[in-house]
Length: 175
View 1 (cartoon, rainbow, N blue to C red):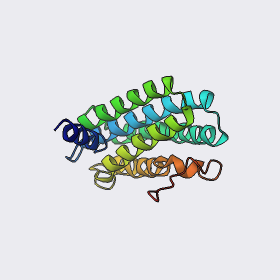
View 2: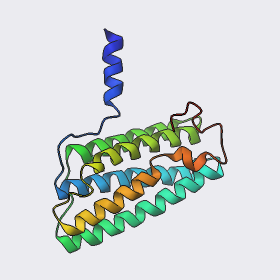
View 3: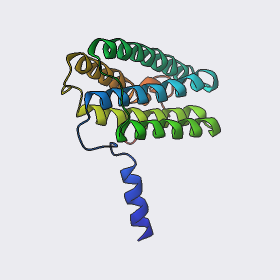
């Protein structure tokens, strides 16, 4: 019974944090939450990553999320929509905090960085999939589509590492 509860708990850890559609303000809050989490992890990775691929991924992630935050501020101002906290944004914020704790104590930093960023970006992608083309405000819809593109590109760090570190690339065909 305990095994079933543990398995169910672990399975739920990879589910999107909400099943209802977010308002524009809540979706904006979720975009900012994932961008902040990814930027914080990238800042650590820039100094602790041992491989060029991990450092390159961190640099791309930091740049893309910085651009995304600037675009969010610009379009938020244009639309008059301000970010709001939601169950989704709080779940993404907590996932980001958990990732930072994992990275701070990781013995194999690059592997931990790959895993935490993959989980964070896939969770965000699942969340935004429901909202990217359904924003009520034109500018927020544009931002959600852009955010989803950035998140999708970053959702499989193993692709960034595959050429330089083939052993990190999944060998089970699950890529």
